[in-house]
Amino acid sequence: MEITEAQYLRIAPSLPRQRGNVTISNLQILNAILYVAEQGCKWRGLPRRFGNWHTIYTRMNRWSKNGVLDRVFEQLQREQIVHIRIEAVKLDSTTVKVHPDGMGALKKTDRRPSENPAADGPPRFIWLPQMLERP
Image (cartoon, rainbow, N blue to C red; front, side):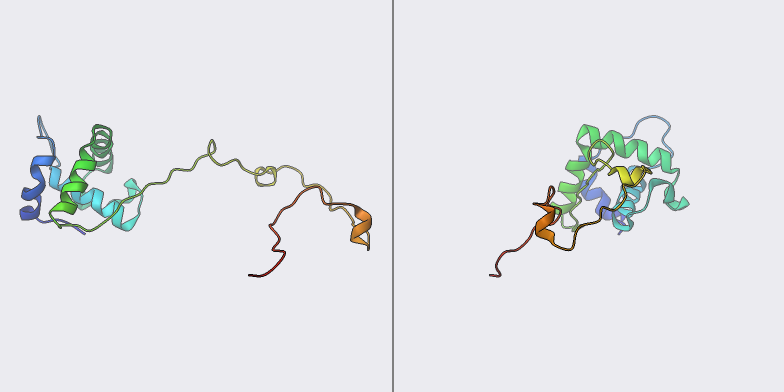
């Protein structure tokens, strides 16, 4: 999923003007971003033909913070150049707590229920929802 020079010229006004000593063009950056979106690879996994992965990531991060990427993808959709919808989900240890068993904690010994479940009393925890009647 790479865009051509002619397609790039149709969306070029929504990208910032390049200044200074720039080795990677906006077209290369945009094609690299589309490659990562399509392949789902890591930034370090970008092929060499796109250029230095860190430069591409840095510029993409800057564009994302400034709202440039939103404008570019909106323009790509409007011009019917690329038909994609990008969604990102971030999960880390502050969002998802790991169960103590997953962190190497000692496991509790298995308790031995009696043969009569009613004698054990009501369960203290409900682990799975139970369906009482079928629809």
